Image 1 (cartoon, rainbow, N blue to C red):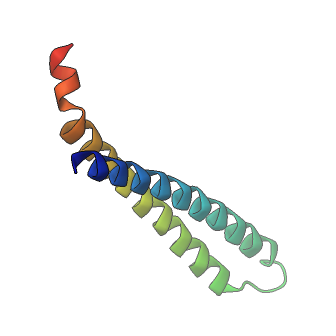
Image 2: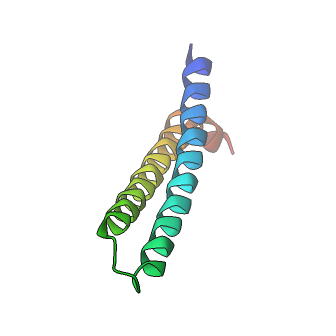
Length: 83
């Protein structure tokens, strides 16, 4: 059962990494569109969406760090003690 839980934590970490990169890409893209449209009249919805995507990137990065700590200190603790 511990093996299954460890694989679940690792899968969740991979998903968090993927979603973090997608969120970063969307934040950059929407901010680029906002800056591009600045001359024609800024659309603040693009800036709002870029901010939301940037916040999602930070959130998923923190989740990834938390999952890495769980994996390191819960599952790999016995390996570091034997070295």
